[in-house]
Length: 123
Image (cartoon, rainbow, N blue to C red; front, side, top):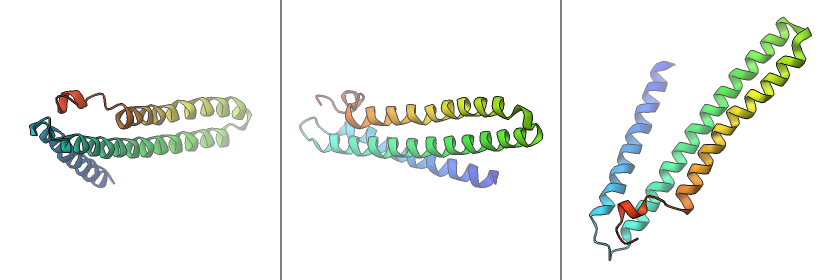
């Protein structure tokens, strides 16, 4: 299980490294060529997509563990079901907010492209 996780993280890291290299390589083009802007946008989209996928997977894993722990607690102590359920719902909302923050950052990368001025001069 851990070997698969480490291998997956290494593959994602390699992909991000390649995409970053492409984005940095776009700076070498003269400003009059607009191909660099589209390459940077493509790299931004792919990177934001991977970030959203990783955040969604992490949120899903965290939520499943929280639900399992809450159900285990309710099974052991049925009298505390109400308090456990309220704490679980608050925890699930906080876990989901992390995925929403990543979505917000991805949307900023898609539409605002705040780093394009550092990659492509004059853009």
